[in-house]
Length: 245
Image (cartoon, rainbow, N blue to C red):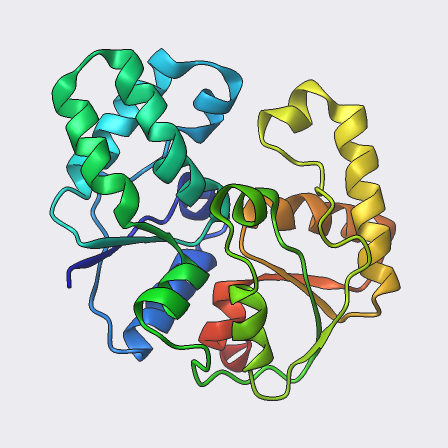
C-alpha cells in the first residue's frame, strides 16, 4: 500500500510539529510515508465561503499530487471531510469530466488520522505513554461530517498512564469554523469562551483534539485567561512528542 501524508496548510505553516508527529507515528507502526510537494491546501476555506471557482485549482492540485497513492492520511478532520465530501461539489461545478473522475477515485482514499490507525492498520494501542489527565474535544467535522465516533477515544484510552476525563459539553463547537471566526468574531469568541470554561471544569492538564485549528482557538483563549491547560494534537500524544521535550 502506498501511503501519503497531506500536512494541510495550517499544519505546514503554523503547526509543523503535527505532521512531523504523524509521520513519526506511522513509521513507528511500519508504514512508509510519502509527502508529495504538491499537497498544499485542500481548498476548504474557499469552499466553505462559497468560492468554488477559487477552490478548483487546489482540488486539481490535490488530485494530481495523490493520484498514485492508495491512502492519504490527513491529521485534520476538517480537511479529510473536505476531500471526502466537498471536492465532489467543486469537480461537478467545473464541468470537467476528468476532474470528476479523479475526485471519485481519490475521495474515498482520504483518511483522518484516527480512521487510518483503527480502520486501516487495525490498531488502537500504538505503544504510547503519556502520564497526564487528558480531555478530548471531538471537533465538528470529525464528529459530524466524518463520523469518526469513538476512534480517537479508543486510541487515547490505550495510551499508558493517560487518564481520560470527561469534558462537559464536549459535542459543542469551539467557535472557530475558519472564516466564521473572522466574519462573526463576537459569536466565535463567545463560543470559544464557553468551550475553554468547560475545559477548565474538566480539571484536565492537557486538551487533545484532531484539528489544530480548534486547538488554536481554544488554546488561545486559555492562554489569554491565564489557565494552565496545555493543548496537543492527537498525533503528538500518540507519537510520544513529550518524550523528546
